[in-house]
Length: 334
Length: 227
Image 1 (tube, helix red, strand yellow):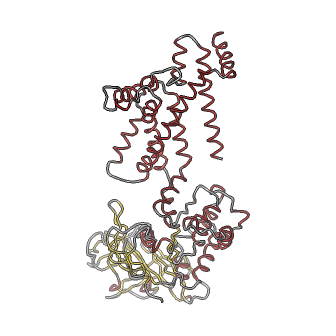
Image 2 (image 1 turned 90 degrees about the vertical axis):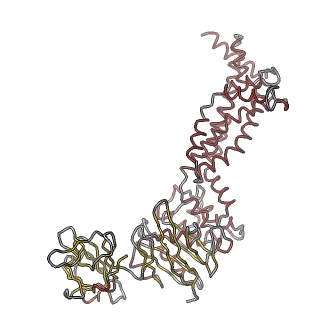
Image 3 (image 1 turned 180 degrees about the vertical axis):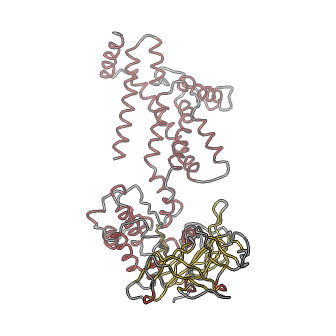
């Protein structure tokens, strides 16, 4: 690791009345691929806008190489670029869209050649696509043109917000190839989010997990939103589910708290005890990946989604009812 | 009915022969329109940009005022400009009353809300992804402004066309602050009003046809630009 490229110090960002990022403190290393995971609305996209200096924070500081930078700062303008989740292409040809950043930099050397290279990096043929307008492109092609417009700039930091969301499988493959090729260059930093958790975990050297605008220590496999209720017979607390079943929890600090259990501490099998909670769940999906000793298992327990990983040799089959256990002490209140 | 058909026939003869009075009215109209359009575009496009692009306190009120100004009657503008430019008015010393610049001032007041409101609407409906894209590709504030304007160029051209239509066809301002002085401030529309009053339909129709021809040339030029 070459040290921290970004350091966020107590950063908050608000939109109207809602706090998209809440006193967030973290650092992102240089020359690595950092994946950012979290549910919808957890503040991932807002974080990416701050990291790419599109927006300033309302509170706190965003340090880039140890210096506080702001939008339009010359120190970051040509070094950091963001590709948003929904690509926006300007009302001009593909050629002009891809070369726009070079025009902005007043870099006029070998523009056609560089546009051709950038397009080929995302699997688009220059002769076929350079003269097209945005309405003549499919969603996947538009996304690839947007990526080519970033790659041509040869940035030091490439930030990607869900780069393969809502594109076809072929475009998704080509986009992923282009990102990996870029990341393999020495000194390049990639920061990305993706709905494909397995791929994200695969390509990332580092992972950050977000929930409700805050960075959490690790990936959560079970999240339960309040209100919680106390069982009158046993006196213990639980989150009541759709099927009258429930998931045991420790005593909540407030009625609207969110309970979370790290994925690595959820286990298949075992029994409830003084220190362990247990509940039954139906296996919905098992994802085994080539070269990995663990499989990713998705279950539904009392109507709530659970993800955990377990050795490939012990994976249940979809449709099975499995007992899930976790140490009560591992439950975190967010 | 015959006098209308006859009017069209004589109008064509007047236009083909290059009637000097008709040409004078056309020239005056174009001079006043270009002056007023220049002024209203220089002020109206940045004003509309600010109104449509930025969020600020009082934006809705400002928008309501601009939208209300769209309905300003031309005679009321004429009255106001007359009051300011007449000898007793605060700007009487400039000696602008009954000149082409005076007509342009009035027409600028007429065109300005049109350009401002339509530019603001165009920017209001602009995809928010544009700003994010431009900044992420390295644009500074000036490049952000110019690239955004370029992105909404068709909307601004449409605003200018609408304003041009209002300016070219108004009578009230030209009549009141121009004075309809032959060879000096007589525009196409004031000439049509005068000739019709005198029963000279041919001259009136000829001038009307010129107005239509100008509108056609402008629209065709815009269509070519949009391609």
